[in-house]
Length: 188
Image 1 (cartoon, rainbow, N blue to C red):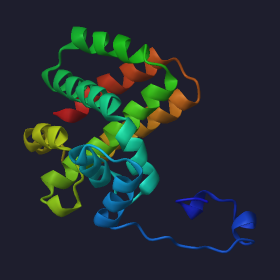
Image 2 (cartoon, rainbow, N blue to C red):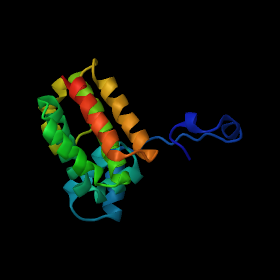
Image 3 (cartoon, one colour):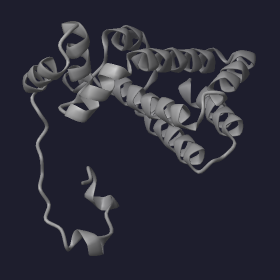
């Protein structure tokens, strides 16, 4: 099972049958979650909204609320520090983030890629494609003006490179500091 068939070796791909599974509608996904996870309807709606029709992602979103709030706080902090060029606080952010552990660092970088993409779409006036929680949307209302076609691809590339380096067991402090310093240049 793969979401991207380009990642499958051609010899394996030629011996398989492709079955495309369309995404679930948000209401169908909400109904399924309500049966399995009765409780706070607002939390369920938020999980469904951010899941983009993916049941597994919706279930994961239900359990990740505290972690995603922390990721948002780290994302907001590094973006504000990079914009205002506060290098001492950037070093402190790097120290804090480097202490999270590799999996949480990768999750943060993937979250940051999503946030940059969503803010770019907001800047391009494509609101119908944007999937943000209320707290993410509140931050993005003003922040999206700083993510545009001249810096969004480069920021995403730097985030992807950092994620690859973290995954390859590179020293996290160096990778995160390199990303943060490049971000200072790109964000303005």
